[in-house]
Length: 96
Image (cartoon, rainbow, N blue to C red; front, top):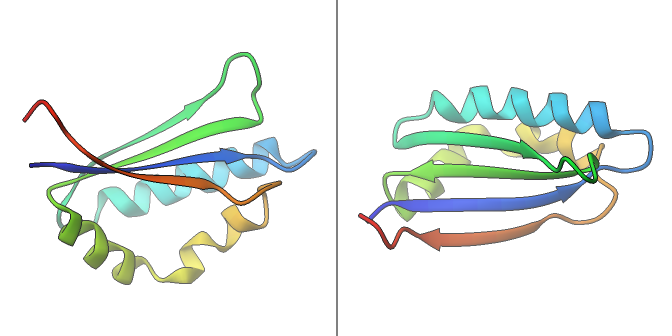
């Protein structure tokens, strides 16, 4: 069964571009990690300050290992650009 991690993020005031660029940079890094099977970065058309960041993994274990490879410093630009704590969801695919 494949695994996805979804993050709902809102940019701080005047930080929309910073958050967008930080998420795109993180997506490039995540894609290179063994066990990662894709990344989506989505921006809300109606409220451009809102983003979804969705990581697709071969398994929950691959996600945990990938997080260790990234390290906390990979998230610093994102944390500096958000206006509130992100919401995170751990999701199992129902269509495997």
